[in-house]
Image (cartoon, rainbow, N blue to C red; front, side, top):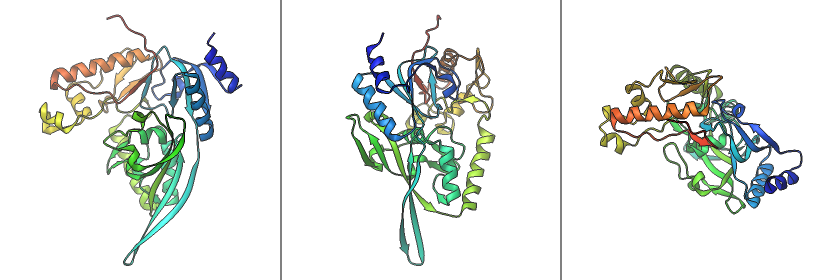
Length: 331
């Protein structure tokens, strides 16, 4: 018997599940059970469960939309907290006048458990510009901000529109932080470094006509459809793009930083390990099937890295986050 687990179950009577299979909560649809599983539907509930887990020294992982992660076949030893918070609220409008032009900023506060697609559709329908190009982005607001999710047509990152955040600090205090706290850079932010939990995000958006926003959003969706696998079990890009310094150092073709290009040029498209396959549409995506294991995905990732290393000398770094316990395979 685990006394810490029992204490947590007493505190949150009837709300803690045991041995919950995590595969259905991920976009890869693979992964074993969590010892304990709790669904937080409000920011207050999220704060309460995190504080309790920290006090009891129970390892925990906060699960958003389940994209960009790979859960081990042995599951997670500890508590998985499903972030199902769902609030979206208009916080205010600020106008500035330059000559005959009036520019309005609209502030929208969003819980981090809100799916990005829901937020983007909300902002488009309300006539708020800044996030429309991210239509089709999987996962939740929390994950998109933490990773500073990016788009290429037009070039934009989710962090471009962040104004403030509300966090639960590693000392269990709730406080508001400015955009500078996040230290946004290409494909990442500093939220995970601090050990803080992002509860809400306040975006600063601009007033715009809905028709123009839908046009931009639909163009993004069409580009995704043509360049990324659709309607399959995938978790997004497996590897990060390389730095310009590495592109120069390893003399990649045209100094390309694209991990997808390097994988494609190395012949990775269509590679398979059991039920895991490299997409034939985009070489930086792995697609899983009904019988795929996390071990299949890990082995395929390792093979992809070795092939690119051999051809270009580049060691690709994973963008996919591994969560939980993995079964070691005999070589």
